[in-house]
Image 1 (cartoon, one colour):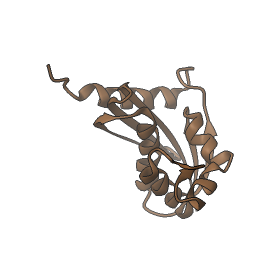
Image 2: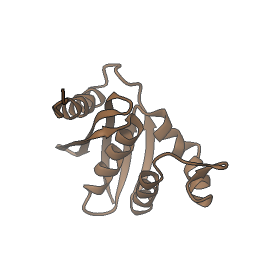
Image 3: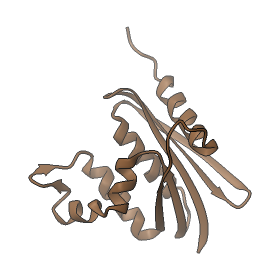
Image 4: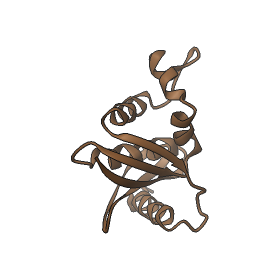
Length: 147
């Protein structure tokens, strides 16, 4: 299996509000930047979409080290919350989990790829995290606010 690093970040102008996500795939000397967003969204949706879109861009199963500054995203896998949520129909206790569509998509991608989740402190000078933040915030800012 190819070993790939995936750096991700999400951003939101208001929560909910204009949002963007950024992802950078690194394989050897090759890098691929991805970004996107939604006009009305939340920061957590953008964090999840960054991971989903990055993993979805891979053309074959890979060993992926996924770096994110979202403790929620990383801990969902490191603490294995996602297994319980899935087993209970994407619920947390009696309450529906927010963004169950994205959690289900991300979970499925982790069955295709061997993914190791790593938390990085955001806005702390980590080059790839900073670049992902720029991709995400630039996309969020690209939506013209209506007056």
